[in-house]
Length: 194
Image (cartoon, rainbow, N blue to C red; front, side, top):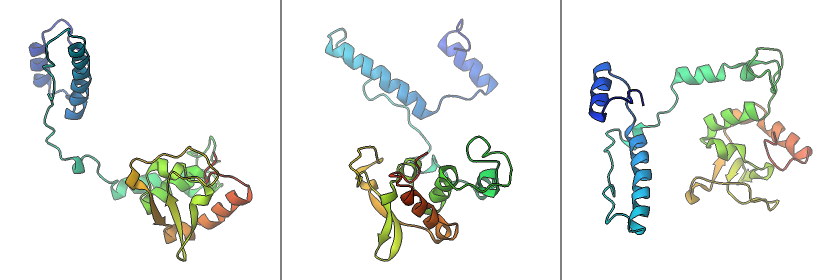
């Protein structure tokens, strides 16, 4: 795209000379997968004899476990130093503006739940109020697609993602139980209705 008047080999040579960032192996493999799907269709329609791109992939030298690194301590300190956690104007449009208010709704609780429980973003966002309950004497999150009110609005990444996760004591210290009770008193089905 950068050098439309050059051949592919010339463009590669220019790119290497300028040390420009290249596409990741995963991105290239995604393109190859789409191209291979087109060639599969062409094969089925008998437009070509076989798919020459079948199984064609670029090796990714970075192991999958190293692709997603946890936040560093400095990154976590930056995230939780935001006004929503220290005092903000409000939690609608002023959550990034320092102020005297300490609202505790979804914008406040979801990052803290993720930090202290390991829940994925969608798992925390889709929690029902009924998904926070006592299990063997401990307050827990029930991570499930089931819903007590019959809704079919929850999804999990895998079937094995269904689990019970204890609520961290830090959440209890921050007043999470009061928040849950307030949602139940308001008859909210969702823990984070906003």
